[in-house]
Image (cartoon, rainbow, N blue to C red; front, side):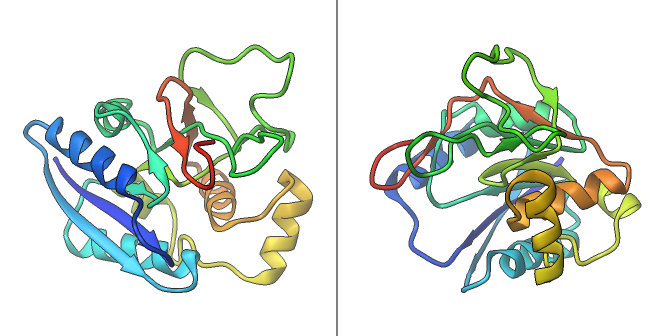
Length: 198
């Protein structure tokens, strides 16, 4: 298997993310990988560039890792072993009160107070791209580019449907409309690094 590790950023890499990534790459046995780092102002365009580079490199999977993520060494291997069209880890947005980056089909957070937290991967409407694996063959067989770039009108439509409208939600919604399954793995402990580790 050949994978691309897409790292889009408009900022600098956090040291904890780099250490997490090194630990995870050391766990990938028999997997060839390429680091696809992109820097600029617009995350949707940077993610699109990562996808296009992964296609040029003939990657079987593209794993997005944001520069403000901290995760255990087995995280990337676990996402790959799930063999899903699209699967991402569950983590919180940066800020208080805590809000999940995973959206259910009704637009609500996946982990609301009083709702049991799933202990196995589950299908969802959208999951953030901070730590996500995408099956490139399924992607190109079912969707047409651009995959991540989107317009303001789409952003407003998504915000009305799922409560927010970032490039990650836009991608997941379009992917589901094209027949791809979007999954969340809640078993990977991920911290979203900001002023605190959320």
